Length: 320
Image 1 (cartoon, rainbow, N blue to C red):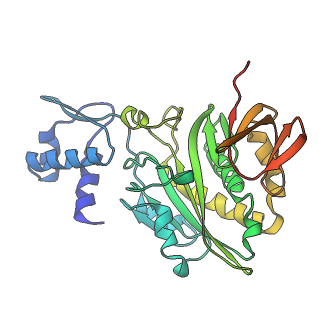
Image 2 (image 1 turned 180 degrees about the horizontal axis):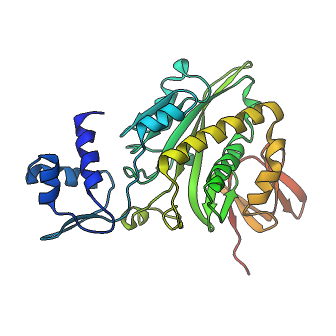
Image 3 (image 1 turned 180 degrees about the vertical axis):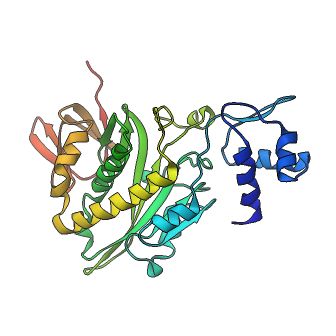
């Protein structure tokens, strides 16, 4: 860890969510000048951390910041783990090193300067507030066998979160996880290389843990996070469990396909048997969602019968 982030993590360790801490106390505890503390505080704000500053009282975090314990993480992940305070995106890092990777190798960052969501959307990545991770996986088959993989990843994330007592979870086809009907997490699967013999994939996922009001205001859809839970999962322990569950489920997917996950998907499918619109710009199709098939296609009941779709985005139709 470089000096730049070592100091900032020390300052964050001094700050609290419940009460103010004076700049003088922080400066004395870290043997720094007040001016240096102010500079680091301003820099932390640039990384998306909302910090209240009140003259005569000091500083206070608007929302908790949860940082990974790197030593515990690396020693408990089965495979290589690349951990960064800051990177452009965890997907981009793995995509740039595929020739050196084995299935299950994972990249985790506290901050992404260019985090990406589906369809090229920006994924907001304030430092230390959420989970930003990507895992490499090599399928020993052509790209057709990867159909439905994002659905498996969604099922896997729900299973890992449920193990920590998170309730009210739901899945939205094809790659979103919801909590109490608001978006909690997203998945981005990218193909690094494909041939008749194998397909190399980078599986990215982001999970909201503690969203500040300032960052939340930049998101253009209803969102949720884990901060409202009676006991928020430890970030390091959750990442270890996510990695373990993902590896197990991806191995099962390779052996038995998406069919092995249909019961799990159906249990959490938010749109099953509901009137929806499937948007495939510039067109849309209306119908009743009838779940998914064993290739991961959305089954939509229309006036012409049940049809299957592999692309697009669904939303609930307003009652008329």
